Image 1 (tube, helix red, strand yellow):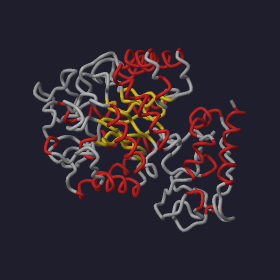
Image 2 (tube, helix red, strand yellow):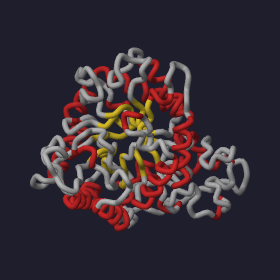
Image 3 (spheres, one colour):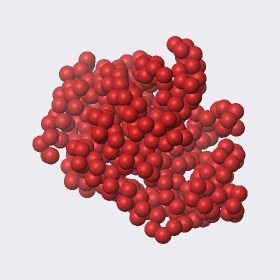
Image 4 (tube, helix red, strand yellow):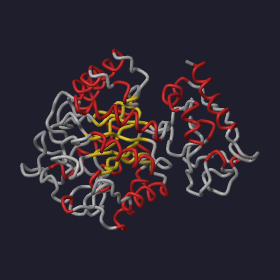
Length: 430
């Protein structure tokens, strides 16, 4: 293991040095974090030679100079050769597994589903106001969120075949970059012209693949992680269900296309539901195991029942065994949705699919437990709370109250629980 990590780090530095155009560009970095904990959490993030070459072709500070030729890669006015954090991601070079790539932030587990691209009639124009969007991202930063999960809707980006509108997403991605919040981008659902329904697969997979290529190419300087669809094992979001056959086909094609556009990018499996064990088993059976870099599960449980975190651990153990049985033990797991309502006064009318909703105080206890215990599970790399802000009668149930802040941005008790967990957490350096 140590030999493999050393070789990867050596190739990383050598590739970087070979791409330098002048003496004051990026120097080799001696990665000093060699503890077993650091290796377990971070070693897989050390890019190989191909990924390194791709990162050095990026322009992360948007100054028109490629990383590999830029003497000040993060644009902070400090030359790379004396900058202790060359990519400006907040992780010192000495413990940064990818010190040339600001899209990565090392092992930092705190994520959030925030619906930042919601600006439509069906979601009450949740972030149609630039002021509300900026306020949301500022609060996410205050919370300690490292990655925010954002819908990149095909219909928004390509409303007509071959006609793209990137305006809204350009502004959103730039805002997150300015605030130092990384984006996990979900590429979904079907555009109106491409399928009979938004939650059905495209009539022609090529149309979706071309869409994915164009979006990844546009944002590859700022976004490294791409999630392909949401809950493809649920009839709500992928209909009709067919044992993951169509999704497996689409995933294979998108994965290959994404790696051609950006060999350094990571493809995240579309978040699977509570029954995701069986969906993942089907994906392996269908030969799709080599078409995602990260396993992604949505382990929703009811915090009002005994030992809810224990239920998450049971699902986790089953998924890990399945991964190991299929030669995927080196991959990490992300929980990109875990959450529950938090309502002031539970009633039958504001209940959710598990029955009566938890109170705001009970929600806060569950947030504390999730981010005090679930993030410590081996090979669980990131946990995303679902979700940041309450909705305005979108689901017409307790699901509208999953937020850590209310619709008016006032903070629930769960806000402090999440923020305190993020503040107490320290990366495993020793």
